[in-house]
Amino acid sequence: MTVDSNPVPTDSPEARRYNRIRRWLGITDFVVGFVFLIVLLVTGWSDWLRDLAYRLGFQNYSFSLFIYLLSLLGIGKALGIGLDYYGFRLERRFKLSTQRFRSWAWDEVKGFVVGVVLGTVVVEMLYLTIRQWPQHWWMLAWALFMGLFILLAQLAPVVLFPIFYKFEPLDNEDLRRRLVVLSERAGTRVRGVYRWKLSEKSKKANAALTGLGATRRIILADTLLDNYTPEEIEAVLAHELGHHVHRHILKSIFVQAAITLLGFYAANWVLHYAVDQHMFEELSDFADLPLLALVSVILSFLLMPALNAYSRFNERQADRYAFESISSVEPFITSMNKLAEQNLAERTPSKWVEWFFHSHPAISRRLAAAKEWGRKRNMTPQV
Image (tube, rainbow, N blue to C red; front, side):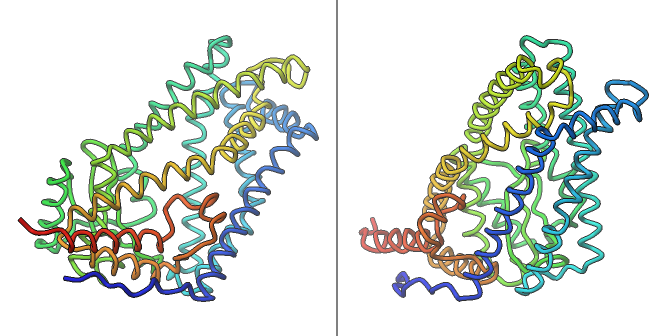
């Protein structure tokens, strides 16, 4: 089969407009959160919230810390709910969402509750280490955080994802068998193939290899299953399996560990400096939580281009594995074009947008790489 040499379809004005609005929405959300943290520290409102939390928490440190965190998350949610609603309306406006307002509002409530539960675990653990081991808290907190990070990666498919979406075992036995064989060729065992009922909320399509160890599973959006051929679905999954073959999950854990260690080291230095400057009485004064969050936000912002570049490198490797694993690159090309159209993605973003914002290479580059691979394969004599 020859590879289609037609040029990549150009982005529609609608796709350009949708992605531009989404970028500005993300930037605005970031600025609102950043300014919120600054205001808390500069105005002394963080100290006032701490004192209020102590009064409501009967002077119990752990309970007061929970009340303080709940207050911060509640105020933050109130400040950002308008942007969240605009994001919901944006998906409806561009006909990408099937979700009703009631369902969206319930998801917001569930998301807030999950955030409170996970935030409470992290913050209580963090300040316990600060109180008990003030000199070396950051190293112990880093180790505990990484353990929790790996645990959540393992539990997410069976605990977190079902809170927001419905899953059921894939009833297409032929397709299930093809995908299991494909995963076994990649050297990984999956614990099941599941139909992800994404259409209840969105018209977008997606697929993923999720979980670790005993929870590893393939999830396929019904919007993908209903509109793509088995060969195209195989091509999409082959890319996901490429991440396993190249050990991207393990490598990403090491990268995350290094960045988190740097973050905790920086947080320790900043906290000591703040105490020396009499901004806070001691390290365990949880009114300094916005300062810790600010360190994390700034570090994440500064590292975003480098992390996105690393992610794009991984995605190119996964693409190459997909090219090698399927009999023809045609299904990869057609699936990428379908996904771009269905998800209203930009095929050819500007260089600076791709450099700063995108964790995946531009679709135009991925398609060009697939066509070049197919051309070389067709030129290679068959033995």
